[in-house]
Amino acid sequence: MPTNGQFALMQLSYENLGNTISQNTLSFHHGKHLKAYVDNLNKALPGSAFEGKSLQEIVKTSDGGIFNNAGQVLNHTMYFEQFSNSPRQMSDKFAALVNRDFGSFEALQQEMNQKGATLFGSGWVWLSADKEGKLVITQNTNADNPVRHGLTPLLTFDVWEHAYYLDYQNRRADYLAALWQLIDWTTVESRL
Ligand code: MN
Image (tube, rainbow, N blue to C red; front, side, top):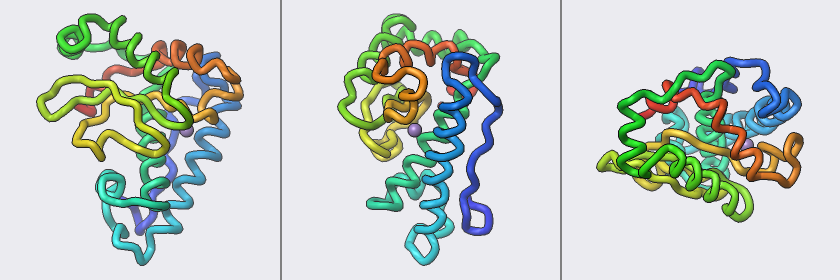
């Protein structure tokens, strides 16, 4: 729920992510891109039907400019919060779900990397849980989020060019492959 009717820019828990995502990328991606989505959402909400609603509720039920900005605020908050310089490992319990639904962790990585690399244009690749608790990987374009499709989002890779172009230029696949070493699985699993 926003404070005083306004959403705040989330704070990063790290100053850099080593060589995987540079401080330069972080400063633009968090300090400029995400900040603009937060500011635009806060400008659009007063007097709208979504004033005072939670971010998830807005993302689920809005469209147009409010949806685009709210979706990007939710997507980026989940993206930045799931990374760490000292990431915690996947629990045995979650690893069992991964093995059940993908066969192996390597198969999950391969599917997520492939779907991230082949998403045309701007968007996000997500690992989510469906209503039965089965883990699924989806491509979602622009500001879309799995909550709009009845899924519980767990882990996401931003494949908008602004997420990687300063560090990786056109090498989106290299960026995707590098992200795995930053994932704090305790944070990811807490979303289930
Ligand atoms: Mn982004």
